[in-house]
Each structure stands twice: as structure tokens, then as C-alpha cells.
Amino acid sequence: MAEVDMSDFKKILDSRPLIGEKTKTSYLSTYKKLTRELAKPIRNSTQKQILETIDEISDKLTSRNVLINMAIIVFQLYDKDTGLLLKRREKNSLNNKRVRIETNHAKLKYLPGRQKLLNHLEDLYKEKRWEEFIINYLLIYLNVRNQDLNLLITRKGLKIKDGKKGNKSFLKDNFLVVRSRDITYFRSNYKTYSTYGTKSTSIQSKKFRKAVLGFIDEQQADGDFTPLLHKANGQRISEGFLHEYINKRTFDNLNESDYMKIIVNYVDEKGNLNNLRQLASNRGTDVNTIIENYNLKFELPPNKVQEL
Image (cartoon, rainbow, N blue to C red; front, side, top):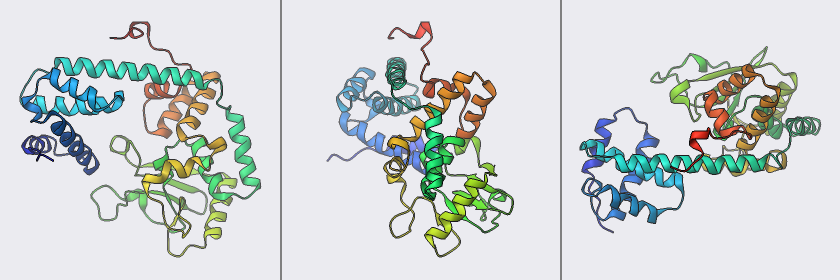
């Protein structure tokens, strides 16, 4: 395999000193892939060559746009024209949005209503299936993603909320902290943390408290922290297995995105904008993103219906 010229990648990192390690890893993989497929440095390629090569690499619009983004970043280093790249990226984004909307419309026919999720939650409580109850409760009432559920439960009064990024006391993780009057849910390891920071929620449900305490006793875990999502030996599962693990513990094996769509559809039918804002706050995103991605009845504006 031909060696990849890394000089432009180093320039990218120099021009973006604040990007995180995960982003750096993703950039590196994309940079190497596109460079190898072009068989020459990205900067020495034309926009047409890049787009033709990307079309051969993948038929997925999101994957194509990741590669196009890398080409744009490199071209911007040299003030090269990116007009064709930008136009294709916009076209891919629109077509991908169209596919997502069509899929959501189809889900209107078979996704259950919110009440069925609540009935399932009640069944889990009655059957003392504590882990599943906690997972489903957080999905329904706090509208979380899979990553948010990869949390640690503790009775210790750790000053998690007082820690800030960069401080030695800061623990960039997710916690359920059992306190005397509530259970406080801290999230610092979730998708949009860099935008919204640590999120803290006080949960005062008696049933949720009983489930959490029941789960701790059931696990008989040693140490201060008990992982909610765990292997047979009690150890925390890795993030690569979150999707499969959580889907096995939801109603009809639905994924967290489907739970969100069910809740958003319910709120939409009630027509309460404040509830929609609360969903967005819980999720760690904005209202427009909620509407476009999770409202099963969302339609593209008339000026966006036709393909670019």
C-alpha cells in the first residue's frame, strides 16, 4: 500500500487546534482513505476527479459527504475553488433528508403510541426487571441517546456537578447519583456535550428510585460505582455494543431513535410548543433538529422538494 503524504493533514490539525481526539481520528481515517483512492494528494486533484472517486468509494450519501468535507478542508488550506464540492454536498444532504423523511412517514403506520411504551414500563416495574425499567424510563421521560445510558450508579455524594473540564476533579462520564431526596442524573459523555456542557436532572419518581436501589442490590457490585449496562461478569460494556444491548431491552426491540419519534409524535399531536422545547433540552439539541429528524409528519418546504 502506497505511503500517504501527511503534510496536509498536519496543516489541518494546526489550523484546528481545538478539535477533540475522536474528531482527529475520524479526520485521519477519511484523509488517508481519500488520498489512497485518488492515488495522489487531495490538493493536486480536481473537484471532478474527487467527486468521481468518492462516488466509486461509497453509495451512501452520508459517507460521501464525509469524504467531500475532507476535500473541502484541504482545498481551503490552499484557497482553491470548492464550488462543485459544496454543491454536491448540498445535493447529497437534501437527498439524504428526503430519504429520512420518507422513512419516517412509513413509520407512522407501524410504530406504537406513547401509551404502549408506558404500559411496557409499568410491566417492567411489576416484574422487577430493574435494569430494563431504568433504561426505558430514561428513554421515555428524558429522551436520551444510547451513549447517555452508558452510566454509572453511585450512592456516594461525589461533587460531580462541581467539576469542570480541565480540573482534576472532573469526571467526563454519566452518573445516577442516589441522594436522600432524589436521584440526580449527570451527563458529561453524550453527543452534544461540547455545545451544551454537563446536563443535570433531578429525578424524584418513587418508582425510579426503587428500581435504582433494587438494581444496586441485585448486582451486589463491589466498589463505589455500579454500571447500568454490564457484561455477565458485571463489568461495564464498551460503547461499540450499546445499540445492540439497549435494543434487546426496549419494547419490541425498538431503538432509541424510534422511542424519540414516538414521543415527538405524541407531543406534536398535543400541539404544545413548550413540551417540544423540553424534549430538545432533554436531548441536548435544538427544536428545529427535533422537528426535521423525529417528527414523523414533517414535510420538506415547497422550495426544497425538487432535487438540486
